Image 1 (cartoon, rainbow, N blue to C red):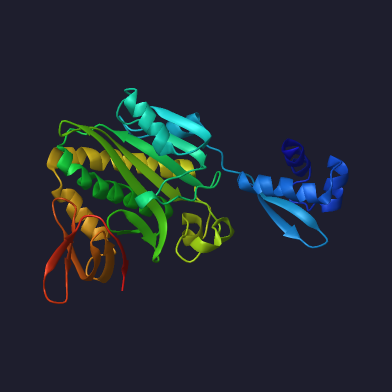
Image 2 (image 1 turned 180 degrees about the vertical axis):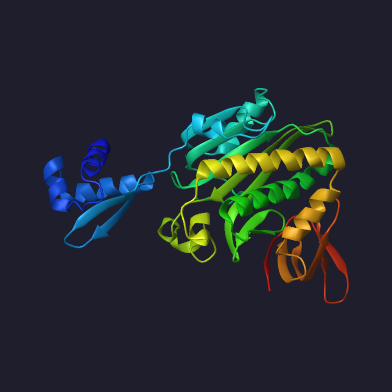
Length: 322
């Protein structure tokens, strides 16, 4: 039925088709037509609906393919193995299975839609069909396990720089690795690792970037706190170009980090950070901490100066500027 609806709109480009006409052509009820249109919207199709006119198809989904994703790569390792899914529960879970099976470093798992996308601290991640880059990178770094948090900040630097270059928007980093535009979240990064005998076996870098979502694509509870590159830039974005830019920047910073250590990453992170120098109120496992965010140390911890001059280091927290 959905294929028949797409065909009807393809025959009448840029035209409105009334619900009554669709009902007659498809031999189904007006309610069924509305449900099918809703299903198409969930697949990334955009319709304009007007009273007494009906529906007009204004945008087809920007479909990813392995050929499109590999054609513009400028990397030697990352993206040379790509596992592309139409729908998946979580790219993070799929990447973990591949990592356990011995898949090489640089493998990318990417999906058009996640039905159980994962965010930090067990939260869900809104991942609608065809509107974002929902992916996980597989790393096998040669670093001690206690350096793993540094990769979190390195990942934020790489993705932030790629977004700035591709979309020409002032993306900034909120500690440790949320990316914001105008105070609203546009990208979340989740790192999970597996270790054995104090050695890292692998690290999974989940990157969820809201690329072409409209305001209507966000649930009500997210509209005041989330945005997309399309909303921020005022124009639709090319997801494949952003994919290539993210992998290029990631490989560049990953190699730089392994060759020269954390200092270049720290300086780049601080230059892109929205957190430093501002007042924060952080919720930690041990209660709230309030003060001024000053710097990050070699472990990736955020140093916060409290009212009485004490320096408190945060390793994991939820916080907001105050």
